[in-house]
Image (cartoon, rainbow, N blue to C red):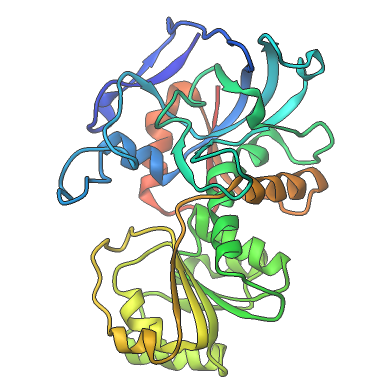
Length: 347
């Protein structure tokens, strides 16, 4: 089969296109999924580059959970159909349209934390076929979403769902989203607005219209100086913020933490603007604020997301689609950052 195979950490040259890659076979409790669409995420780029570091060695080359085994087929976002079932899997799964939960979990509980990812700890969807455990499948026969829209959901929207659930974002609250035009950021805007929150989006000026279309009530320019940003934020959220959903990190924690109301929550799931930050701890404990780390979703979070997908309750924005043999161009377009929405791969 055709596959994009990561041979080592490095640049684009480390990601090799192959048309002679072995077709995987499902074992007991597994299925073979024919990939209809996949999508590109930051974790694909960072895993290729080995940009996650190790404890005490931030410069070390590693995946998000530590050292990786190569060669590796990346791609955590997988939508497709079941081509073959392994022993012990009900035959009615064969031929069914599915969305795949990409996370590995610490235990069998519905609220178990994620400890791994397809495309990182095991082969993923940048290929014509992938073998996955049947327990990862979610039936999408009734979903009105296209294959590309379904493929946009698992990593970005799963991460966003985990953030909103862990921060207990509720109807009527005011939430600021950093990095709002990226994959997870846009998902946060859509999902928070869908649950009745008022969303303030931090982004570049050129992407304002797309974010308002996604559900943002107000937008703030991320390149404004500190005084200008504070004025605009006060106008957009005169009563302060109930929560911040942060996928950027860097200076935003120190700059925006004072805007949180008493008992406010700051949930973070990314550090593209800088992983090492400085802020005044007194602002945290004197106002009973919560700082929450959120890496991905739980089984319960993903089940809720799959339910939205079946009902058409969320419709991801697709910025562009690329064939699998053009995956280098897809990752370059993704890294350029001029798009709004998801970059998809069509095997």
